[in-house]
Amino acid sequence: MSVIRPTAGSLDKALRRYATMGELCREAADYIGGFAQAAVQERELFTLALSGGKTPQALYELLAQTPWRDQMPWSKIHFFWTDERCVPPEDPDSNFGMARRSLLTHVAVPSRNIHRIPAERKPPEWAAQSYEESLRRFFGAKCRFPEFDLVLLGVGKEGHTASLFHGSEVLEEKNLWVRAVRSSESSPRLPRVTLTLPAINAARRAIFLASGAKKKSILEGLSGNVQTQENPYPAGRVCPREELLWFFSEGD
Ligand code: 6PG
Image 1: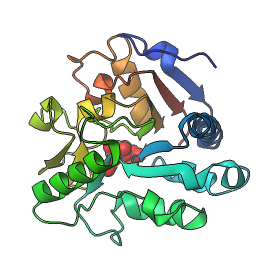
Image 2 (image 1 turned 90 degrees about the vertical axis):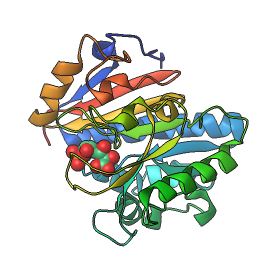
Image 3 (image 1 turned 30 degrees about the vertical axis):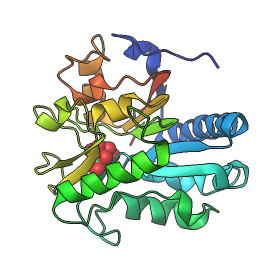
């Protein structure tokens, strides 16, 4: 599979369209599985940052079913999160809680491989600092930024990704790996903790998952000037080191 290096205006090359969410999830599961196998063969490790929201739930549920359940090197995969709402894990709005229900309780991932964001800690700034410290312990203090193998991302209908919102000073963060977001423009309107853009862009690869008409208009808005740091849409500023792909389904 040829790697598509992110360059400005490369959305058309990076875009993979599917008629249904089911087709998208099968293709995305195969993509993740193939990359995980290759990374584990190469380095005995695969670091995967999960996104939250509703869209990825069907993908997580699929990964918990055969053949992926039996094929993925679960004991070598380390799970992280791109962002989290400032609620306890049991809260219905918790991104970690959704991934735990959909995937993690159904597959053999050792608990030591699950690095959730402790977003229930108050204030959110302390939660962000705690997560950054745990990432630095895992990736090594010498790393300028965390080098995830793969980051899964969603996109909001106004172009945000993770919890990076247009016009937010957090979007302009250049040094920290993790920041608190006091006010979210997107439902649920909760304080959040998010990876910063440089922390996301230090990843080897990133894939967006999006579906439905509301997201189609965002894709059209992104096309043409994607992957530039001036892009008005936070999602348009995602530019990982090796490959960026958009998995889009017309149907929800
Ligand atoms: C969150 C997500 C957020 C999400 C988009 C799309 O915590 O809400 O990380 O960035 O991916 O808002 O959400 P949907 O998939 O629910 O449309």
